[in-house]
Amino acid sequence: MLGRIWGHWKKLLWVAAAALVIKGIIVLAVFTGALHSQRDPILAAAPDTKVRPPQADGGFYPADPDRLHSQVEGCLAHAEPPELDGRLVALIVPHAGYDFSGPTAGYAFKLLAGQQYDSIIVIGPSHQWPFPGGALTESDFWETPLGNVAVDRELCDSLLAISKRFRCDDMVQRGEHSIEVELPFLQVVLDELKFCPIEVRDASQMNCDAIADALAQAVGERQVLLVASSDMAHYPATDITAEVDAQTLDVIKEMDPQRLSEWEVEALEKGTPGLHCTLCGLGPVRIVMRAAIRLGADTAQVLFYTNSGRVDLRTAGQSVGYCAVALVDTGPDERAASLDEAGLDEEISLDDQRRLLEIARASLESYTRRRQIPDVTADSPALRCPRAIFVTLNLKDSGALRGCIGSFEPHHSLATAVNLGAIAAGFQDPRFPGVTAAELDNIEISISILSPMRRIRDASEIELGTHGIVVCQGQKQGIFLPEVAPEQGWDLEATLRELCSQKAHLPPDAWQQPQTELWVFTTQHFSEADLE
Image 1 (cartoon, rainbow, N blue to C red):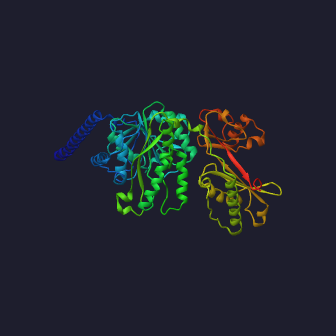
Image 2: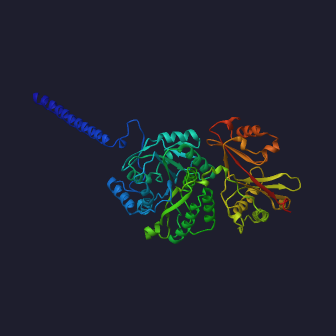
Image 3: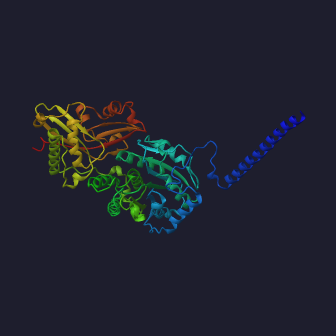
């Protein structure tokens, strides 16, 4: 009996002793962690903060901190960037695996050694998730194997207050590497680091311009570096990749963000074997370039270029290009004046108008009779530029509308847009049945070519009858063509009230609210009847 009692107490004593040992280990761990926090406070996030864990470690870069630090140091040590011609405003850097693009990134990030910045804004493309606007992070820190990087929440809040195009959303960062892979380089070259990540999917002019303008406003007088994360051509053979990328770099040197989009369309329409894009981060590069110009940059300096086929021959058949580019302010900047004051595109010549109407007529007849989309040729440079267009069909005998389809954003060269737009007007307008062969002779075709959208600061800049108007608030948007106000007999205030309520589904006075953006554009309209 006593033996059984003693055995029971013996077990209890062993349990108590084990508990004391475990408690001691926990106390030691907490104490060690406290010491670690004192050595490096950035690495120790408070319990109530949110930390984004790494998504690309072990794939795009080493998960082991020692190996990662050594690889970054190696990329920096071998880089010999040229001396800059002025003040560094922004960088364009690649975001592939370090074995491929790390040495190129080293040429850009080596420029930051010994520098101090209030914040680094890193803009990367979303490879997986479609979404509008720009996505900021919900997290307070981003973790890499080298420690945690603090998010500049003050800058994020400023952007949220300036434009409704921004929102905080970590979901679109899941599995995404385009911003994260830049952080270890920044951690190594900068002693103090806060950053603002912005993920972008929509590369349209309106979205890029709005985000860039908000960035320039938020930065103000602070010492902030802009970083665009982007690889170059995907996936031609090595030599062709180099040729395409050389032309892309020439366009970047022009310091014209819109021209980058035009070049993308031109390059893809050439049918280059294997070419999927000229810049996978077209949106981030456009945004950073426009914002950098607003902040004084007037020159693009290419620091280094290579492609994956030159790094590893196994990818020579399907290469990806990598560049390091610095956007610098060389001094007094005549071109840094607001891009909103830039003139709109020149009008299309009469010869080009006739050619576009010929394309539209041939396309509509070919598809109506044979269900074939004809090939088009564009000898004029103006017809090869991307433009937003509308194609309208009217009945000659009555003037009644027979179809109208178009876009407010350029998606194709002007010639291709008209080629496809004529068919869309005849067969995709849900208000009408498809055009029949018997109707072709009674149809008159007209084309409206839209200028690039231009943001305005005050409604008084709108010229009724001349300007088309776009109102944006968050994800709500409404558009009127220039002829709407004169046709309805509205004055400016009535036009804006109707635009807000009818088209954008906003309160009628939303155009007066500070969070509402106003944009204008012009149109050039011509028809077959005009040119007979």
